Structure formats: structure tokens, C-alpha cells
Length: 382
Image (cartoon, rainbow, N blue to C red):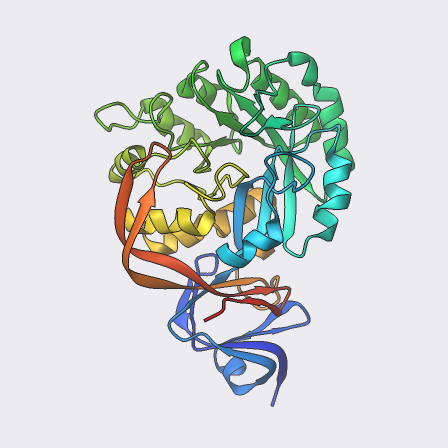
């Protein structure tokens, strides 16, 4: 009888990357997926857990978060938050810039049990003035945006830096318009990386940003409320949004404190425009609401009618492809041994968007347990 490090028994394996959707046992050994189905069922595990009634998915990825805890005013503790939301891989987008990335790497990333990658901010100091007391848009002073330094640091850390981040809009770049985006693209082009562009209040306009983004670049906060929403007042999706998707621009939710509206989401989903990526934009000012974490964001989409398989795809397959780590996104034999185990709980649950609008949902997603590197890392208390 084959011996494994861990066996999860009786769960529904939902794995859009491989097309697997079945109730089956899954086993882990030496940090990898070792067996699925009959072979796993026939073996024994040093640790075994019954997960009947749960969904076993690849380890979930939050592609927009701020986890430079202690080094920035907006950072949250990745490992602590992961235990409540099931995220096994984080992408920190722009908390650190070229001037302070080494501190992020040494003091947070290398000490974290959950995996952290980064999009390096074009701003030399990253997002340095973001709190209830001080709010300074880092792209408001073009002297801080040095594409030479940004590209150099990105090339020095290819194992962790997966792209370049920029924030533009009246709140973050003032009257500089599209200039910070052009500088970010220049750095990204030199480093051979994609760009993630944040937008807030215009100027610039949502559609003007889409015209500049390249295939593989990410528009984050894609379901914003008015102004700078992706749809007209009557709910029609703007033509430039469809064209950008055809071009290969990636649309990322990034809920956050000010960037997700039920009205916009309903219009976009009704038009058949599903987000490519579901992410939380979790940070110090929204971790206690309205975003909370990515599990809550996923639950909102579940109650809005997005199919569960597509929700899971948006937090596994697509973000893993963007990161260049497809091994993180499936549960095939030999793949990275991360898994998120969750269940759907039925009841009456109140959800809130960034405008204060509430929605009563009849379901929510709840974490059962988390597997990291083939070991049972966390079990939610009963």
C-alpha cells in the first residue's frame, strides 16, 4: 500500500486547468501532487482529512494585493489573512518600488509561508502615502518615476518581479494624465514585462487608458463605478472595452476600497463580459470592509450569477498564466502541491460594494483547509 504525506478524501476536485470536476481522493508527497482517484484512495497518508461536501481547487492566487506589512502604511499580513481566505499565492502590486524593493524581499517575502510575487512600482518609493491620515498620489510628481531604475531593479529580481505597476487618475497622478503610464510601459518594455495600470477618477478616461495598454497588460479595477466605469449609463459595455479584450488586454477586478460596484458588475455580467481575474486589492483600509479578502469577492460574484468554475478559473488558471507559473494552477500529478479547500454555505448574507450599496445573497464561500507545499497548513476551526 502506497504511503503519502497527505491525503484529502471525499472532496470534489474542481480544476479548470485540467478540466477535472469529480469527487475523488487526492494525495500529496514531497511537496507535489502525487496521486488522484483510485491510486490515492488505495494509499494511506501520514495525515488524512475528510473533505466531503467541499471543493478542492488548486491553491488560489490573489493577483492584486498589498502585503508589504510593516514597510508601507497600507500593507497587511499575508500569512495571517491567508488563513481566513484560502489564498496560497499573492501578487503584491506596487507597494514597493525600485528604492525599497530589497526591504520587501528580505523582511516580508523571504519570511512568508505563503508565496509572494510582485509587480514593481514605477514610483521609486512605491505607494508611500496611503492611510487615513495621509493620502498622497505617488505618480503626481514625475521626478519619482524613473524607468531606468525601475527596469534595472526588475531585471535584478526576475524570480519575484513579474511586472510593472502604475497608478493614474486625478487621485494618484493629478494633472499628469497618461504620462506615468507611458513611463511604466517604457520600464516594462526594457525589462520584458507586462504593465498593470490602476485607474481612479478621470482624467484620464478609462477608454484612453485601454488605447495605450498592450496585449498582456492588465487594466485593474475593471468594474469601477461611475465615473470611469466600463459601461454606459444604460448598461451597454463601451466599444473600446470589447476591442481591448480582443487586443489581449487583461481585465482584473481588484475590489479594494473604491473600485467595485454591484451596478457595474451586473451590467457587465449581463452583457457576457466576465472578468479575466478576480482579485481583492486587499489593504489596510479595506481589509475590514468593504473588500475584506478575495474569498468575499468571489462570494459576491457567486451570488451575482457567475459560474463557480469560472470564478475558480479567475483565481487559478488565468493568474498563474500571467505570472508565468502554470504549475500553480492545476492539480495534475507532479504539479505544485498547493490546494484550497472550500465549501458553499447557504443562508442569508449581506454584501456591500464600495458605494455602500448592499446585496443580500443566499450563498457564501467558506474555507475548510489549506494545503501548502503538500502539507496541511491550516484547518478552519469547527
